Image (cartoon, rainbow over all chains, first blue to last red; front, side, top):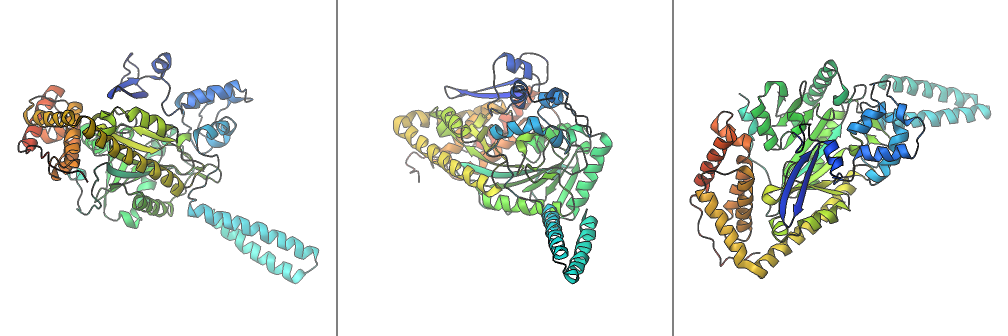
Length: 162
Length: 357
């Protein structure tokens, strides 16, 4: 889709209702900005990131994801991240934006079952370790040996699940 | 050879589209671990993702009866028709390589591979029907996930190419026919009000499309910080409110200046019966009035189903599909008018004694 004003690819699509009449316009990012058309969703990530620049997040401009090569500049321009690792790299600039973008900043929805299994195994390992430590402290070596065997089993299972 | 793709192979879709809410849709965005998102992936990586996803989908029970299509094998016109039928997104239709879609035989589920995210799971249901759509999507997702590792973070939820989809990755939406609010010039107020509630309003074909035919797609904007049922609950409350507003607007239009509305509807019938050249957006606006007339019982109930079918068939891709070849816009306008004349030839006089429920 071409921009209404120039030949560039249109990325901003505006639907306005004026006196009950629908008006539609396709604009490229720069024409949209020139015309002062703001994203109706109020979610233009580029402009949000500009604000984060202004807030002076240290090193934001030079951030690059080593895993996929996405740069801060690219993220700012396209509003999209390149891979899972980007979420670690760009976390400092992303986190302040999430609050305005979403209803909250913590995921409260579905958790994939593999993660659930993984998580409960991790938790069990931690609690077994604590128990083992306590058993050793209490010099209850019989129990400690039992716990150590359980722990070994669980760890090798967790590794297999990977 | 793909033309049977476009049509449902089973005929059991309940409930029927209602007077105001045409359809409900749930979309889930998912990505695989260890692969860059499609926008950043190399051709080889996209190919690997496609084959991994197709493999995982093969094992999903609820998708036992489905068709899988490689986008590379479809002509531009075929892709356009799938978009017009809401079976694939515009973005997927424009993707260059290693993209695919899996369609269930009843066409209620589709899974797009290598769109903006690796997987876009979509479930469509008639009428206002979030519970069953969410349940189906949830099961489908769980089935796929049993064979794939999703990119997931315990704080941010499902990781998506665009941070606006983080968390649940869920977009719940309905398609609504709101001629009362448009004609009474109240639609902009409604859009403003619901935007403040984190709810987005778009045209018939989603992002960037216009709202011809007074059909709007209304969806949640926020995906992180609430559970799926909470998002759906909030959306449902707002939608019920919009349905109420639309009903009031229709009543008021009839009360204040019923003759003008009846005149508008009658003229729309006349135009559909006698046009020889008609563009899709003009056709959509007349069809919208016919649907409204069916809701008012000025026309028999069957005209609602007819307009819903014609909303899709007047789209450029469908006109060309009916012609059996790609054709120029001018010729399309002629063919579109011809189809509409045929379909609406026997439209009866408006039954003005009818009572609205």
